Image (cartoon, rainbow, N blue to C red; front, side):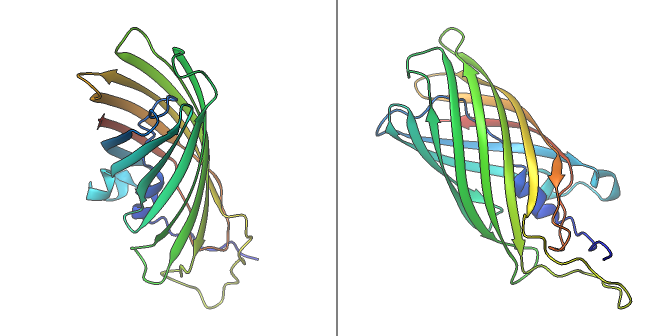
Length: 221
């Protein structure tokens, strides 16, 4: 069958392009950590249209410590939903090196097309090291599963045969390098770069991700 036409929704690309903006260290037990960040997103569609607000995806994360090596978090997903996650640091809290495993689950309405929605399952590994009292460089490697539902093609060809949904969804890798700099008290500043290549595409969901580059800055407290 002829492969389904793909629609690269900029809002969705921005949604998957949210940065990491955290080290492998978990939030202390009973404490709350809030981070706010702003990124600039570049992809292959950049030269085809003017710079838009969707090229500057914002992000707000809230994390709560539930164990000396475990915290849970929540963040807005694609402006129309919510994602929750849990992070486990396998290293001792006072160790300079951190190695954490993180998994989440979220759902959101597709604000670009009424009636459409998505399900997102991200998994990642984060490594970081504390240098002195203030500087913590970090790395991240992850994979995001995306299932898109209810989208329809903007244009169709009556003579064409379109592919059916395969069911395995769309997949995006995430490669991140960043730096956290502690300031006064719990205040910290972050800067990072992420590359998000699209590696899997379900030909029947009327959607396709594109490769994205993101550069962002953030503040946490």
